[in-house]
Every structure is written in structure tokens, then in C-alpha cells.
Image (tube, rainbow, N blue to C red):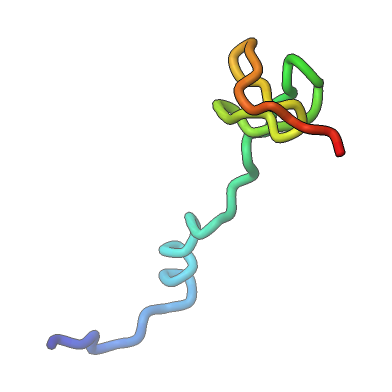
Length: 60
């Protein structure tokens, strides 16, 4: 296996790692209960998706 003859500089390593960033999730408001939720997911608070109740939420 070939190995590098010289070490890479810190700047070169940092340029390679510029994309190692955590992105913030895209959070939207549920149109039914107005709680925060992920897009294209059933609302965990009310159980609605696309204008209808998908998961019945029981209140204990």
C-alpha cells in the first residue's frame, strides 16, 4: 500500500473537513394542533397527517 511521503498541512486537513457539519432539522408547525413536527411525518402530538387522523391518540 502506498503511503504519503510528506504529512498534509493543517489547512489541507481543515479544507477536507469543512463539510463535517451537523445540519439543523427542518421543523414545521402542525396545521391541526400547531405544535412543532418534522415535515412529511405524522404529528406525534395529535396523530394527524395530510388533513386526516392517521394514529388515534388516547389521552390517559
